[in-house]
Each structure stands twice: as C-alpha cells, then as structure tokens.
Image (cartoon, rainbow, N blue to C red):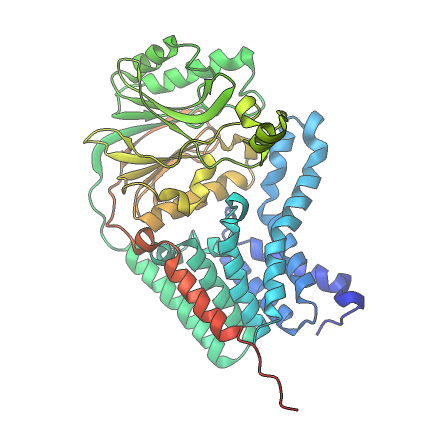
Length: 491
C-alpha cells in the first residue's frame, strides 16, 4: 500500500505510478487500439485506488496521464502558425489534461464512500464518462469504452451505446482488480461473451446497397494555406476538377468549409459548382454570412445552380468556434470582443435536421465535424436513411486526432444501425456500413475523390430507441448496491 504523506498526498512515486497507468490506459484509443494494454492498466489503477488512503490524488493524476496521452492532438492547432501560437501548445495540453482529469478525481472521491473502493471507483468512472458528454455542452472524447471500437465488442453499442461500453470496461477492470478466482473468471467470461456476440453479429448478412453512387471529394487543403487568398482559386479549381470527373455520380459531397469563397457574395459560384456536378447535386461545406453573423454550414447545390437546402452546425466547439457566454456579455454589458453575433465566431444553428436527397438517395442526417462525437446529436428528428459527416481535420495534423475523430463517428453508425458517409478535407474519408465496417476509403492526405456505393440501413437499434436510459438504470442499481451508507457499529 502507498504511504500517505501530509494532507493525504501520496507522494511523487504514487502519483507518478498513477499517471503511467493512465498513459497505458490511453493506448486503447485510436489509432493504436491496444485494448489489451488499456484493460490491464485500468485494472491496476482500480486495485491501486482500492488500497490507497488518497484515491482522489491518484485518480486525478491517472486521469491527467490518460488525457495527456489521448488528447495529444490538442497541440496541433497551435502549430498551424507556430511562430505566433506555438508557445501556448504545452499549456493547452496540460490544462486540458488536468481539467478533464477532474472527472476521474470525482470518481476517486466517490470511491471513498463505496463498500468496495476498487469496484466503486470503476462504477463512478463509468458514470463520470457519461457525465462528461453533457456537462458544459459536453466533451465525450476518449471515453474508456472507446477502446473497443476496432473490435467485435463495439457491436454491443447498438444496445448500450458508448456509455454502456464504458460501464462494461470499468466492470471488467474492477473484476480483474479484485484478484480472486470468481470475479476474474466472471470478467474473462463476460469479455469472451461480448467478443463472441460481436463476431457473430458481424458474420450476419447485410441488406443490398442502395443502387446509387456517391462521390466523396477530398481536396487535401493544408490548414496553413487553406485561407490564403492567393491560393483560394487553386483550391476551388481543385474541387471543381475532382467534382467534374466522369462518370457522373448521383451525389457529390465536399468536406467542411471546403468552399474558399462566400457563396452569398459570389452568386455565380453556384452555377460553376452545378456545371462541374454535371447534373448531380453537390453538397458543399461552406461558411454562410448574414451581416455580422456567420454560420458553419452545409449547402446543397442543385443542377440549376441554386441552393435547395442549407444546414447550419448547431453544436459548436467552445473556444474554437465561439467563446462561451460571449453573446451574453454583448447583450448584458455591450462587450463585443467575444460575441459570435458581431463576427467573432460562429452562430449556432437551430438544431438537427434531415436533408432529403430524393427517393433514390433518401434522407441524410448531416453532422458537421465535432457533432459526430455526440450520440445525443443524432436524436431530435425522424429516423434518417443514412448519416453524413463532413469535417476538416487538417487542424489536428496526422498523429491521432483525425483517427480518433473518425473512430467515434464510426461508433455512431453501429449505435444507430445506419450507414455513415464521412468526407474529410485531408481524411479520414470513408464509407461505413451500418455495423461500422469500412466499405470504401481514400488514403490519408491525398487530393482525390472516391466513388462509392451507399450501404443499406438496418432496423432501428435499441440504443436509437432508448438512448442512455438502460445504462442509467444499471448505474443506479450498482450505485444503490455499492454506495449504501455503512451501518455504524453499536456502542
């Protein structure tokens, strides 16, 4: 057992060990996908916290190690203009890591009130994973359940979603941490059953693809050059050239903010895009401006050059696309420096909506970049026929960010039983079937296009029907069993 020092501090050795376990636990995240490192590391952490008189410190530093490793891509946006912003990168990583680790510290705190501290920490960690997806608009990135995305176990998300996968992961880790034959055997049997069910599911036949061809355009515009006015025409010509390639598809899709001009101020551009489409509608990512207000949008250009539909992103990135409370400060105190409504960021759209591409292509639910991270953002409309994500992951380099983002989007397909079409500026550009398997893809960081079929949908999944309710019931039951007040001994 680690010795407690003053004020409950477990010492540098203790927090260092916890941080290392956190780093190992992060190895299960994409692109490594090393669940076989993550699960033992989480088990060791549960064991450590179960024996420690200072679980909060250990959990906090373990979380910091975990998030520093998993979210290392956060430094990349500061490297786009390294001379100006590079000095902020290490501060951003440290603040993000220790900030997100507060959820783990909360789980460590709750473990002190559990009948079994190791199991209590595991259950509380799963609960805080769920909580993290909603607090302050949410950030459900690098959930512990994401370690299964590239394995058959991910098929369980059709029933229990990402929070259920986190709960499964936590319970498996706690079972191993108890180091007794029965819980270890139950954990091994549960993992084997989950793996076997997923493998069986993946072996089942799929409905036939829709008889359509989608063209996914990947322009590979480097972030350092993307908004250079001198290069705007070059990037636009590249998009038009890739769009116009023969044979003509049924629908062309460009990535997020691909259009380097404002369509509102250059109405002739619609006709140029339509001409390149050769009779096919073209769905484009663009910025939309009205007066001082701007939106991150997806617009559908039809063959006559007009815009038939527009979707405005509604779940914005805090501090990336807007400053929290910036509009309120403008309204209450006339402070305009942070206000989206005076041009300092994007405005949020009204919410989820479907794009109807006609009887052949069906209806798609658009997700712009960050929105694909949130399973709750796929609710609020009638059920679509497929999911469409457009994104610009060039901000996040080539290390881990784009691949983690794509992995989470892939999980949305499994959860909903719907195919997902993902179009990225530099990648990952791919088509996923309704069980999350890649059916077609482009190499990363090349300028090209992909002509691909649209996979069919599966029947609506339990998770699409009930959302987080089953997991909340399970968490409530476990909390009632584990966190009941201990009886005081009679005097």
